[in-house]
Length: 323
Ligand code: AMP
Ligand code: MN
Ligand code: MN
Image (tube, rainbow, N blue to C red; front, side, top):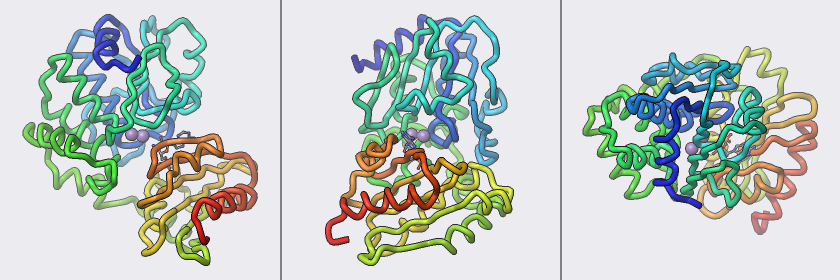
């Protein structure tokens, strides 16, 4: 079943839904979950939104973000768990995953490539550039008028997942939806500045460290950065400061595949993949237990930084002919 109307019915029938996005929250998971939360509140639901991971300071301008509970799930008599922008149960966060083994029905609303969504009710649309696009349709179905707060959350969801409408996932439908949001008065240049125009000093220090480790394959088609734990700790950086670093190896002329390796601990590495035109990085990440989209994906892999890097680069060089 992949029916948005059926999902809308389930949402309307719930009274006390618990909503969440994914770990290391991004603009799409936060914007989408906040917009959906507001929409359900306007329908008289008692909404709770939880994030296992801390929220990036960057998103503190999002309307309603102060209502998000960070860490443990408050004890309440929930009747539904609604997961947005997350394709795998492991990524909903350690404080929420135990609920998957309870009787609580689960709704998944997502845009990642996924043939086996984990909800009891699922709506997955990989052609959507962001989960925020699906939420725009859902609001229309629920006959909820979009106000400025909803529009800011949804605009942020879509503008972040499309890299300001520059990535391949951007479609005419994306722009049609954005035009509806702009009609509500979204302050575009202010949001552009808040989201893309400024960064904390720690992010720039981390960029400096990452670029000092930048490597490019002999063929010039693969570029990667590595960030070890000592560096992250020395800078005092958190997850939120790492976001976006992968765009630098991706920017190099001639590079098709960009990879970032980030040491989580002695035996675990978070890997991010981005491609430009040809490489399906969803398939590549899947080989290492992860997933995502065709041009942006990730995985968390066991092994030391150098072991993981070696294994992944071997696979990457096999995928890119002549590399
Ligand atoms: P990231 O590189 O973490 O920004 O992730 C890029 C895309 O891949 C996002 O859409 C993520 O949802 C997805 N992704 C990242 N890590 C994983 C994972 N371990 N499993 C499945 N999808 C992932
Ligand atoms: Mn996301
Ligand atoms: Mn997304």
